[in-house]
Amino acid sequence: MGRKSAKIAAKKGAADKAKSQIYTKALHDVATAVKSGGGDPETNFLLKIALDRCKKFNVPKDNIERAIARGMGSGGEGYEDVNYEGYGPNGVAVFVETSTNNVTRTVANVRSYFNKSGGSLGKDGCLQFIFDRKAVFTVPKELVTDEEELQLELIDAGAEDFDSDEEFFEIYGPMDAFGTIQNKLQELNITPEEASLQRIPTTFKAIDDETMALMEKLIGSLEDDEDVVSVYHNIEGEE
Image (cartoon, rainbow, N blue to C red; front, side, top):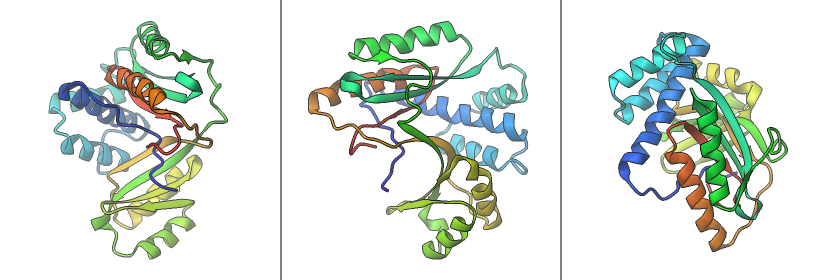
């Protein structure tokens, strides 16, 4: 299957913008985990994973506390999760996940990024047959003593596919198996580096170098926006 996270790391113009995007994603994961499972990492497995990621990327403590408060329903300033679907240059499918307290601002920005790259923002649902939402877990290799045995355990929990490289063991499953796979990993005392629902493309688009340059510009603009959490695409052969 390969590492089909369907994201490309666009070339960044400045390191601080890249850091800002990492913070945005990590803090969104904290708030989402708290919203769904409470503010105690001892009983909220997803919050534990999200806090570990914040620690890894040196996210400031004040930012983390504000994200926890947002998840608990205080200090949220009206934030909501909003998705946008559209097509980049030459018909590349692009799915954008945001967390925003000003939808008018966010949609205007997202639309402008698409327009400037020769693409266009589409209607909600226009990409429903191009992406599947999958449960994805990324486990550091040092936590896996027997890959084959772990696969068998996880298949029983609903996992469908696996991938492995020198550093990580990745687990893929249907969206509705997220909880059972998560519980199985907990039972095995394995804490993933990342656990999320991702949008995996079902069909892919082959593009030329010129289109790739435009796509890098589009995704770079999207990922630099403070409201954007994740960007997915269906370029053939790209992650």
